[in-house]
Length: 212
Image: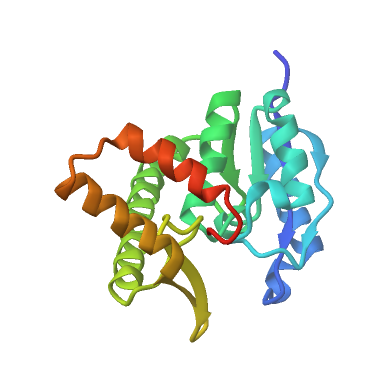
């Protein structure tokens, strides 16, 4: 029976203390793997000065782990927060590992081969909650910006123009284009004009010099 294989992941952030130094992490993981009888495929080059909240793909060491997931039975880090400090990013890593048939474990025992599945379900629930909270914050922010007249992006609707002030972008009525809109509305509501006829008329007018 072949020995189980493992990839060791090491990350060191700017605020790390002596207990999370690269050598300490590597030694703890190698000792854990040896105790379990696992064969180490490789130890990643440490992601040094890399935030645990950063995207997985933006970390060289983690990018190597993702590329090799299908060749390993386990991925091993010294502690849970070495994988990620963002619940969403950790959830993404869990899904990638699960799809490749690998299991995430930690040398401190928080994630073990025996308990990993349970922890995965709990953290996935937290990840879903965090996603909902982020969506709610974004929606609330957009509602607030709209309430104060801020424009959230994209080209201005016809009849308006974009203007910068107070550190933001706002919509203002464009006098020339607004005049055309008012003229069209009057012809539609009071003079029986058709949308097709107005479109053809205004297409010609817009091509004339001096028209917006």
